[in-house]
Image 1 (cartoon, helix red, strand yellow):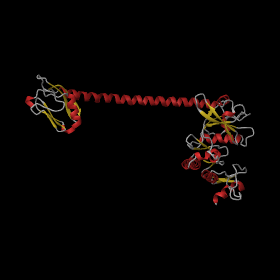
Image 2 (cartoon, rainbow, N blue to C red):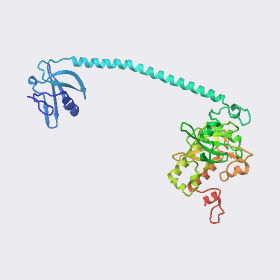
Image 3 (cartoon, rainbow, N blue to C red):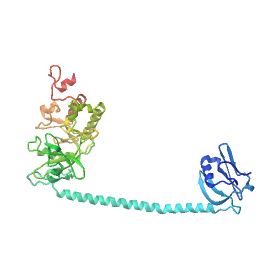
Image 4 (cartoon, rainbow, N blue to C red):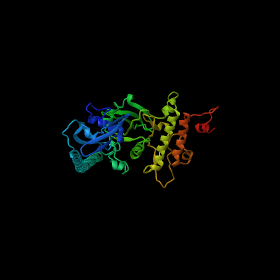
Length: 397
């Protein structure tokens, strides 16, 4: 009987594309059947039964016998070729193709691995060479105390990492000659300016002023510490400049400035919803935990307050201003100092009375800061009905 159904021509033959489509669509319903001379395909298409069951009367012969693997079945192009004879050439050709593919894979895979290894070695040696050159250049450009010839090895601790050394002319150009338009603010260290490098990189410059309440020792201390501290919630130092009797620190630029500008402003405080305030508290906590537990050395900040918490584009906090910070050995619990530093309202009582400081110093300051983040109130004012309560007394009632 002549085959009939979708894809079957008038003479009963079926094209290769239709057979392939039926095999793909109907899977196990398209099983090939072989005899000595012919190929019979049996499958169903919906309610229509498509079959080549009259083997001796089939006129559709296979003229192109290259086998195609589709879902584990064999597909052939059919045509009316009465001189057809079954051939094993397709099977032999397929086996040869597979052998060639295996051989090609065995050749190309080792070559590819060797090329990757060579490229990796080239990149490694290039980076090593560049790093060595940078270290040599930085080693030649000593950091000097203004008005002296003290080299960097004596000026800082021996394990202080090399930072980028900025020239005074570069800083002057980047800040538009320290213009008022570029001024971001002013703290105990001195004025802070925004700088722009030719490549578009933005940074902040802290310039030590002659009337600064913090001096050269604080400057050296801040460079030494911040250069060795690496944490997402700590402000990153980029370099320094000590030309022309100048002492300047170069930091990453944070566009949203400091936390106090939001907390204590009657309008901007509403930018800090509860979720943002919780995120700020969590970020400051992570930064302090790093300083006290997870850095290579324990650090007491000693000036943790709202104005020293800077905010990035997404209002994530970064602890800044390490000029007053002190290193603490892991085996030491507390120490004494004859010099009382810090900001009134954030300093623990035992430090003010006896000069004793420990890791609890920053914990006390953080507690005050936490209350401020929650309440948006300053700690340098008096509260209550008679305005006779300080911030902590008012918070306790």
